[in-house]
Image (cartoon, rainbow, N blue to C red; front, side, top):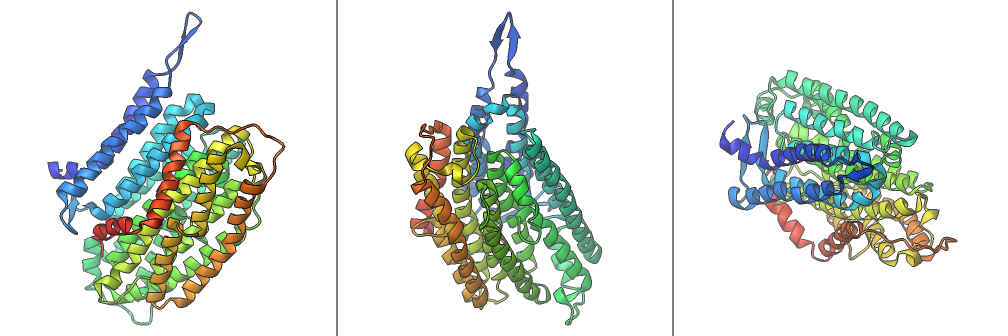
Length: 505
């Protein structure tokens, strides 16, 4: 590896190094008893983690402005990792989500004082894996990055060590292993068909191979590979019909962990699938069948997620089904992939997906972390437990309501603009029926989102004790809500960043 390789990988390396620093600091700051007095404190761990995230953020920012010119990409480490603005966009998203989760999780995690070091180490290791995944451009690297992400995530899900948490971790582990096996089989079939593991080499070799006109994706081998790869990533993206794990895992996991999984894990999986998808977009036998496959997945995810959420009484399960529906809306952007020669048309799909993911990250973090602050103090994770929140914690109530309205897609939030962009992209690509299905699903979703809003604003509670969130929790939720409002009112800022990031098209 050259110095350039290390420099291009520097944000990933810095994140992994920070995880090791937190692991060492955990041992050094462990509380010990001497002469009947307690010495040492783990409170400093959270500050080390938050401040330490400035290093990978600075390195990524430096790469964005100083290394890359307009639409320039650099393949590094023997072509296994592509350092480009597309990867950096998602790395910023992952770093930001990690920082916000850490900021909000400290009070919640006081009940797990002995596990603070493990929590931060596992969280940062998973984030490093995700940052590697979004730039992976070789099949083995994709697999290794996925495993680096999945294993710490499983441990995080079981961190609470009670019955629900252990069950969540066990289910996550088993289904994650199954999805990884499916993905690995798909990658093996693709390698067997082309004899290459680098994506650019696979694309080049597929161009010289014969395609059968009557077979989906032009070849039975390619079709099988595509279906297995989509099934493997479907688990990571929480799309139907690979969504079964989401409600149980989100309910059993610590709420900050569920927030992290719902945003960072989903974004990284969508990013690598986008890189794969647009690498093959030039081959008509492959590209033409994406639309049908992803349109069906989008319809199933939106419908299943929203219908299942209608009957939920547990907030975390409701939000889990909401994330499935949100993944369905994102899949509308994948279905809107254009095979036209127009560069503007070809970039419409990824632009709408990336804008939606950015807006969704701010919004979902705000809602999840606001609820984490509430449930930590009330011990009640049901919708009824939110009754009287407006009186008990007016600021937190207003912030959570704004987040819920953004998830629904109400103006002037980013949720409204993101849905408008992604639905209009579908219409432009001739998928009017899919846009109609998405709009109908949004109307259905209004019932359960507004039900929660109604309980927060107008519900009555026998418990009148005020709920006082910590400064870190309030700051984290405020960051999410500020992003949901600012990027809804001023969407062109994010859209401009997205346009500069589209080196894959």
